[in-house]
Length: 148
Image (cartoon, rainbow, N blue to C red; front, side, top):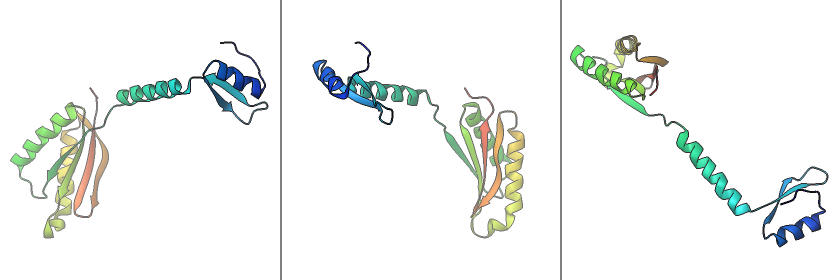
């Protein structure tokens, strides 16, 4: 296909002759810039590129671990092992302390528990958000240090 400058009528005739579409690239230019292409093929290739880009994008997996303000040491260790496994697998971790009823008076215990978890998981993950109280939940996010 030859490249050239054609008047609009001639460009339209040429596109019909080639059985392709005349697509306006830059309408504000003087004269307007148009291109003769197969528009359906162009859309198909664009969709294909977008799909490939989407497949390459990494999906963020967020795993949750729930504690109570009075979680004992055995349960804590058990949940910490799970948290460590999640971080090693490349998932983000949302650790939270859920305060039921009047247990909200133990906010400091909940914060200490989350900070202890963060310090013990320091070699596999880094704290993305420090413990923050939102309603009856104190939440903290930990991201993995090295992704697979």
